[in-house]
Each structure stands twice: as C-alpha cells, then as structure tokens.
Image (cartoon, rainbow, N blue to C red; front, top):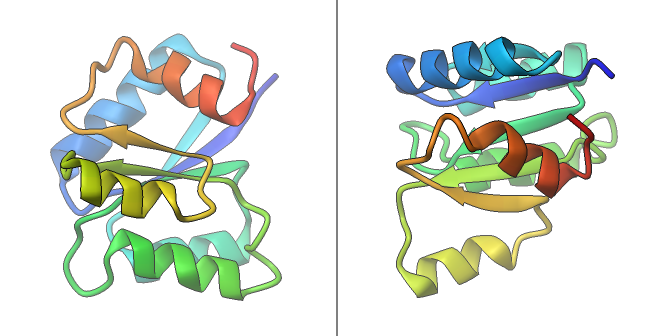
Length: 125
C-alpha cells in the first residue's frame, strides 16, 4: 500500500538521506519541508499519512510544530514521529509524554529506518 510521509528537518543532508532511503525500499512517497511553518502549511493543504519531525529546528522547533498541528482540526489526526539527537532520558521522556506516534534517535540507521517508522505507525511494508 502506498503511503505519503512528510519529512521535516532543517538539514538538507538529513532530508535527502531519509527521502532517498525510504523511496528506494518502500512504496511510500516522501515529501520534505525545511521548517515547522512550511510543514504546517503542507499538512493543511494536503495532509500526509504521517510526519517525521525533527525536534531541534530554528524559528519553530518540533514540539511547537507538533502543538500547532494538534491545535488545528485539519491536521490533528496526522500521526507524528519525532526525530531527535537529544537522547538524555529526561529529554526523551518529555518527548514521549507528548501524544506522538513515537520518538526516534539521531543518528539513525538508514537501513533500519523504514521498519522503525512502519512499526511505530502500524504500517505494513
């Protein structure tokens, strides 16, 4: 089954690795956004099946972007997975306390990423 995932990260290299890796081994379409504001606009215009959202971004961070998505009835039901380099237990618990589909750590294994995302979202690959 084809799915559409929005990858939101301010680092072009990260966006490219995720997009190329996922499109190479899944049937998913991967769209990208460079920041939270762009992600919100894309989600409102054409909601993806899920969002992979970087936690640390300039201007609007991942948790703020997630809160804005939750505040809008048009985007509230989109599952969000947070992607973070912050792996300290207290920080990780803070993110896991949010009603997100999951939290993945950076750096990530590009080969394992499709299965990790599918597992968190309950998608078949």
